[in-house]
View 1: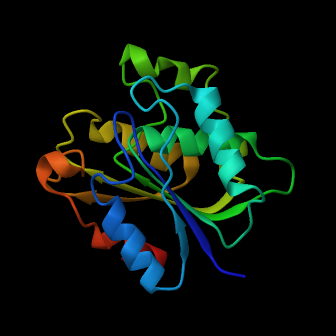
View 2 (view 1 turned 135 degrees about the horizontal axis):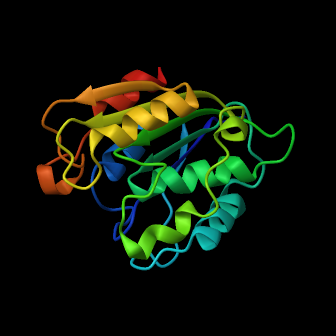
View 3 (view 1 turned 45 degrees about the vertical axis):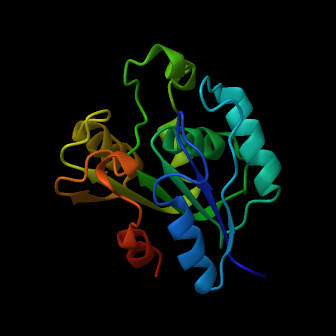
Length: 181
């Protein structure tokens, strides 16, 4: 069975932006089956729509599967993991420039109610890899530190990386390949 990777973009984003096309190409070279979907209504995202869409794409989660998210894609992945049934698990969640607590942007506030069940979520992946920058203008580093603590994750901080997106020239993110191997 081919190892699957799903890369979930963030708010106001698309599969063609940031480091996603590069990651898809590089992971496919390593033999992964990679899906980078267009998430529903990326300008006005709704938690339920995003979680249901991820469920539909993934179908049956398995212990070889990787979920990778950027920005709002991170909380979407955490909400998806929270929705998994008893024995359903994945291998790794790679959470880039993300957050699990409110960042006070009204259009995405629906992702934070009710509060996340971290105890359940951390049983749904064998590894939580958190990648964040020390100068993210949208998501301060404290959000990554909170996820690290609440998910028993491993945090890598990139110096001067901004939001790790096109705005600061992040079109490749070799660190994710290191973390997968």
